[in-house]
Image (tube, rainbow, N blue to C red; front, side):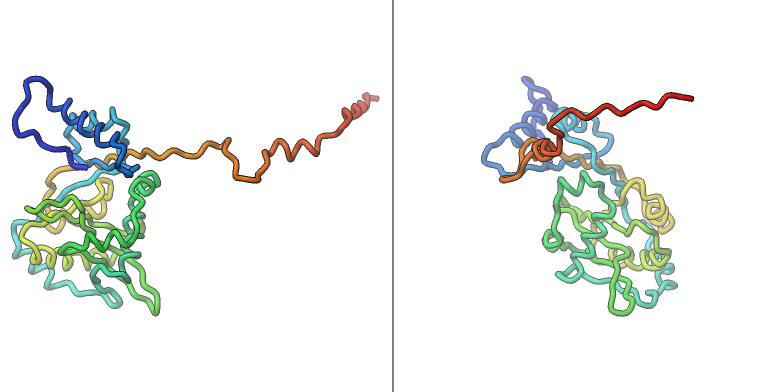
Length: 263
């Protein structure tokens, strides 16, 4: 969800009141079947974060945004020394590779985030923007995903935003392949932005080493209207546990256990 921007300031209400009212009314609309909501904003935008928290949104993930390096000559020389390792290939997002890319996305998300987003691999095909793809390691007949670039549906027309994903276990081959991927990414689009998980120290340090600059941090917040079914609701035909155990209760009180005195 993107909060609309006011064209002119209002004298009757503050901007925060407008934002809170718009988000609340959107959630309360009866003809909307959406039960989970996502809101993304800059991590230092305290006003929007406070509004979201008051409406029940919970922080899901922090992102670090990156801008491309200014000096392309150094990057070109570095890429010229790098080659694809044996058995490694960069593939486009397709029906074959989308399920593997989804695994990478889930590896970097919390259980709460996966529950709210509830993304299917088919959804990644609709976000198949310029630069998206997956780094595959082939061994015999099996393939595993090491790295991926997935598009964001909220990317604006002025710039393409891609999230850089990786497997939870660090693979040293990423250090060889990432410079090639980033260089080709820069050449494919004039305006490109990359986002990584803020707490991914290895991946963030690798971007710094290759000349990418930190832009800003963002926070993803989520809210779900789904409620867990009460434990009191039983499946049709099922009996309470107490009723089943009641048959095991003795009809007469048990005899007392004799005590053996000390000699």
